[in-house]
Image (cartoon, rainbow over all chains, first blue to last red; front, side, top):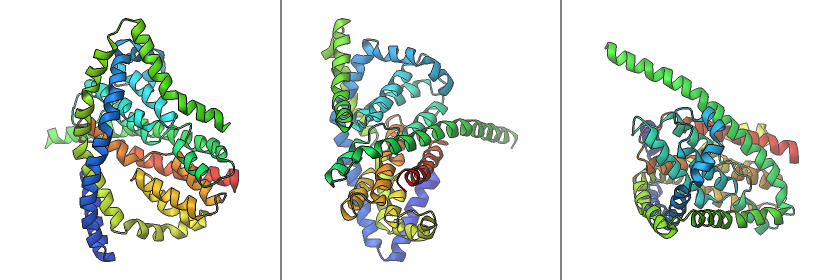
Length: 204
Length: 177
């Protein structure tokens, strides 16, 4: 992340200087900072609402129920947390909301899931394997109904908007499956790398 | 078909809310008190993610303003032409994992300026619908729990995006090409 952040900023400034858009780059800095706060604050209300509903769902045993139902799948995928962790229920809620294109409900569910995963995490500033897998699955954007896209297509007078649903689903499934498999491979490779580093540190 | 899908979209959230509240009342849970307890975290979470959002959104806004995306698009143009991908799609493939609002902006732009039933519009629609803004998801979710070392999460996200773009092109060619 440190290197990516550095490269993004340095590239922007160098390319901006090269294309003569340095002034725009500087303006973008101010606008970007402002936009971040706007995004965060626009989340407060809807986040509070869904976290409230999630609290009720938790207390009435719904989340635990979903977790139990998905235990066999969770055991295979998220193998560094206890299989009956409430995180599984939260993750399921997050995917359900995403699948129906309800992104403003999906975010609070996902954050709740991350909080539960964090409880099981040993190193609190470093992502656990379950977190990486969950985010990998999430960034693949599993979606059954691309609501925003459909709205735009209907708006421009596209003849048969529903015909894009099937190919979208197919593509999203491919990316989703790939994300899971790739996370699992990376989990192995990364662990091997990390143990090697620890070993080297001890030797030096 | 579209009516049924719209109906599902419309009813998904109300159904969740109705279901949760009804089950809770049935189990004699003090729903109002519990709601307030949970909702209190809303502000905390939103404020927690601000530093993470600032880092990622500022960096990406700067990159977009610098003209780097147009430059990459020019460099990649021959490759995509070789794969029979319309040039209008190019900025979309690059911006997709970086910024959600920019993606929607470019997509609306493509949709409004090209023939509504053209191949480019179909491919753009599939690309936008089938993927998620990777950098936003990473910064919000990790920000909420103060994770600073992402380990391999970003690599998985970016690789999944690339696989998504390639399969979108292939699937679109198979179905509409």
